Length: 133
Image 1 (cartoon, rainbow, N blue to C red):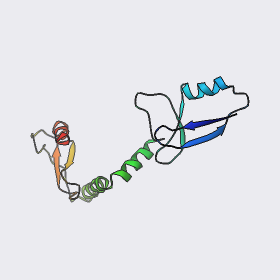
Image 2: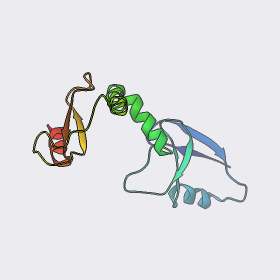
Image 3: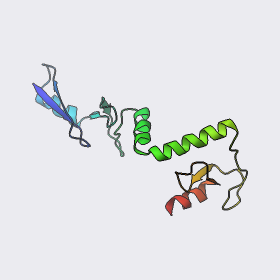
Image 4: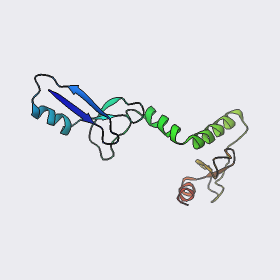
């Protein structure tokens, strides 16, 4: 007896041979039960997932991170440039939010990713309002 796993996000289908002791009702439970079989969108690995409100599309956090870096090359390059500049001491942290003046801003906001070292140091509240614009 054969069954097919289907990933809803892609057209990938994997055929596998079920154990001879499995009945048709066992296979239905396989698809409807507590663990669903999925295929990672980045590496193609088959992984199991418990049903969640927000389903996973990657098998592990590293695949999610690598997929983001592949989709957002300009942003990733800007983040890397800031990290390297801070590490070398060319860029130091500001003490106050540049918009509201709150002490110890947690975020660095890029107005333009093509100019990676031109940053605005902002608190969480101001950063959220900047991202919505």
